[in-house]
Image (cartoon, rainbow over all chains, first blue to last red; front, side, top):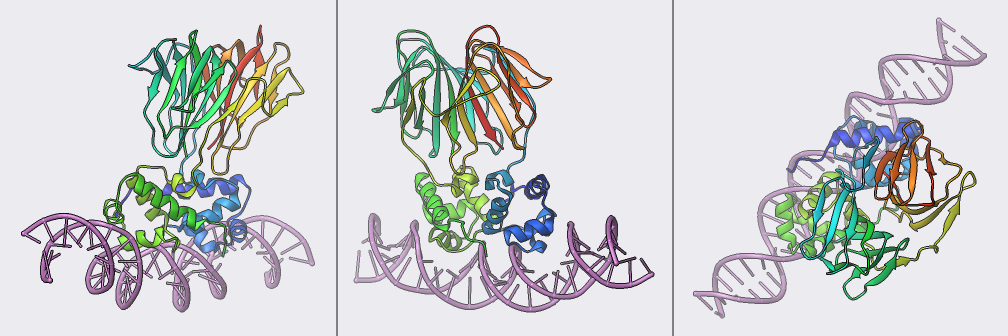
Length: 184
Length: 184
DNA sequence: CCGCCGTGTTCGACTTGCCGAACGTCTGTT
DNA sequence: AACAGACGTTCGGCAAGTCGAACACGGCGG
């Protein structure tokens, strides 16, 4: 049997969202068409709920199902320009700084991109379900999936799937951008 | 019994991710410690899998569980600077343009922010679990939760919880920023 | 004080998901 | 041709999740 499924997290999540909505256990059970005995056991951390049950609860609570599986987070964090963990590409003058790493349960990374004109940076395909959003902060950039590149200027925004090879090239001046790499 | 859980979607997702990994049904069943009969039924769209089963499959497939529940997406989309659906704040010269709305199943909105010096923009608290990430593309900005504001310059990045009142104020010149409003 | 409605819990019966074995099929090898 | 190994499907038995009823506790009004 595979372990690793945090039953307590699910239990806590259900309870947390339920009280957040101001529902009583009885009330939520009625709204979600789930026996309150079942709900009671789930909040006690017992059992191994079916998807249908979890779906019904998530729907009644008005939250995505994944929010019931992953725990919450908080607080304020500042990363100054020029600081933070960075990765320098080998094929181009392309520096990616990690701003907000995908926390356990979340599904997106945030990068600050700094690129100099010259060689385009070629990125290998990512895992299925990856979508990238790029906001151009400064400069002119040619980017996008190979064969479907677009030329963007400061203030422009593009969304594309990251499951195919894609490039990033600063055209005539140093370019800055924000990259959201999202996992769906 | 509550309906609305797309069994076909789950079935298709499992099958899609399985073939993407190059696994056979037998192989995945062995890796995930799930009976291949169970897996066969799931891919056939029958049944109502338990969370434990789905978790084991997601882990073996190397994808977040939510990816097995929500369907895929695709394509390229460009929003030019100055275009796109926008909202003008009433308390300040603060223009927010929606770049990528939270699609069904996802949990984040992307906005381009353009603000002029003058009055600070005050935002009311958002729903519990909201986290905001702001990347400053141009100008100097004072922002953050009321009482914990920070002063940022171009290239700086900040993360804070959106569950309390928070402000955004361009200091001495027009400011541009990218806002990621995330739901956890 | 007692009944009433609300909370969340525990219990037995039913339903159903999970498992392992057996099955039919196809491919490549001896 | 016969066998071996892989594929995915179907079937019976066991385990477990779900349900509804009955339960204990606490606040409130008659």
